[in-house]
Length: 240
View 1 (cartoon, helix red, strand yellow):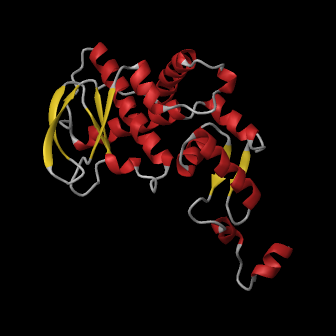
View 2 (cartoon, rainbow, N blue to C red):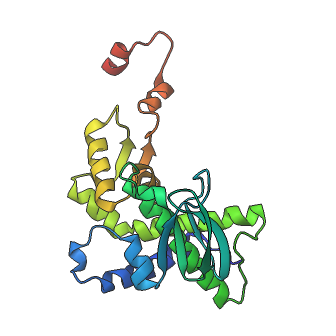
View 3 (spheres, helix red, strand yellow):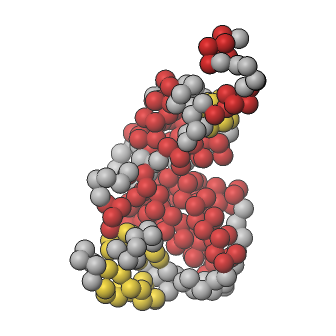
């Protein structure tokens, strides 16, 4: 297995981004979002299919470097077998629901595209990668690589900075907190929508790029606990 560093994955992401921008029929200045389906189909000639991938809906995506038959389920949860032929990506059908955030679907598709790119580099180095046949520690490493590459593909630094500028965010955010910085948080949320990603994915990416110092997406106001002293009240805390 090839072990890619974050810098390696960033370089691969930049190459794909350049190719994606060249493939678009509009000026790069007019591109604000990377479409993972276009990356899959137009750049890498991958086929996308949507099924229920597990009976409990826990599997969101599948792909394989070679022919591999997997059990999937139709909309009536009737079992059938589908061939992953080395050029096919399967995506959980529920991710197409209007109740599921678009960012989750986009990241899942790009995650599977990232696996295909990593398969390509492994094959080029003469290394064989089998579908779901690697040890757990190796699997964790492969999933980290796919997640990291997917983030670089979906959120190139230039597009992240462009989205931040579009919603009038500063070049660097010190604190992302919906309670303490509501106006900045709203702009950040809008930037995530422009990029077609989840707020969590964007926050992680911005921290990687050095554009965000601290994030309290899930625990707004938590940073104030650091400064809490016995006897403090909310009124005198903010007055000091």
